[in-house]
Amino acid sequence: MDPCDRAQLAEQRHRDQALAAAQRSRLAVNADGLCSDCGFAVEPARLAVDPTAERCIECQQEHEYLEAARVRNGGRL
Image (cartoon, rainbow, N blue to C red; front, side, top):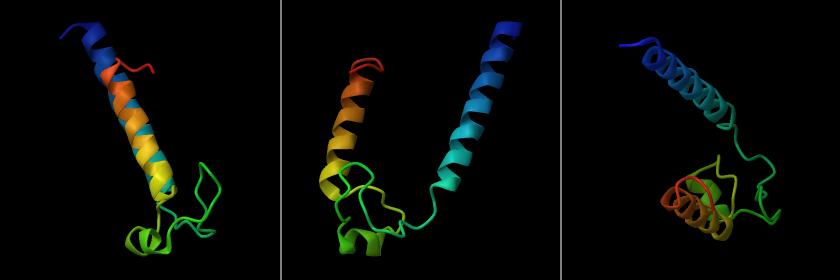
């Protein structure tokens, strides 16, 4: 394995660790129950199933659609 490969692996490991830390910090309960995108209330049934839900169902569907489109387009929308 050459130095570039090792550097790339180290960078990926660092990125994975940073993402995991960010994910852990987001595991806090959505105390105010508001959607982070539109600001309206997240459905109570959704919060009952997943207290960490940060988006209402409509905004979450849009977020997932846009993320899938971004992946299909090579990381850009």
